[in-house]
Length: 218
Image 1 (cartoon, one colour):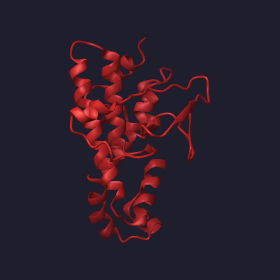
Image 2 (cartoon, one colour):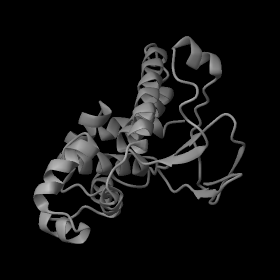
Image 3 (cartoon, rainbow, N blue to C red):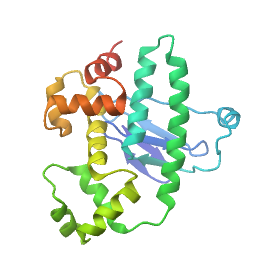
């Protein structure tokens, strides 16, 4: 997908999460035949009724926090389930999504060392085979300082953040029914399928097989 607004054009590869403010007109274009999107629109009254901050977010931006992608994946799963408990689940997930969006925005505004962004770029590209010594040398940051700083800026351990990123990639691959679960585990960076299933259930509250079956039905 290609998103166009007044300030910029954003290429949205599979699995992208794009936020838009009300005041920011934009246009989405399909850049491939198989491109598709899932849109969630909030109106002002929904925010006001739940006493959420209407002024916090401005403009449009691509979001990269894997926790946000997990919540969006769960929302889409419930949308596809569409059973007697889906409406309640969707309402709760929307509130969680807004809460994490606000926290993510506040965290992004807080001052942080430049190497944090570099580290996130490295991990998003690939985390396979990385050692603490290699990360330290590449970033120019002492290993001890790295170990102390990562929980502060990532709100979790490095290992957990990496597993979150792998699960985020798996969610995107789930939309392609041509891939087997073993293929998805490999493409997402998991060592084996059993590890993939354990991590996916931890972050998504369902198995990879059940998730793929629901999101690709209809």
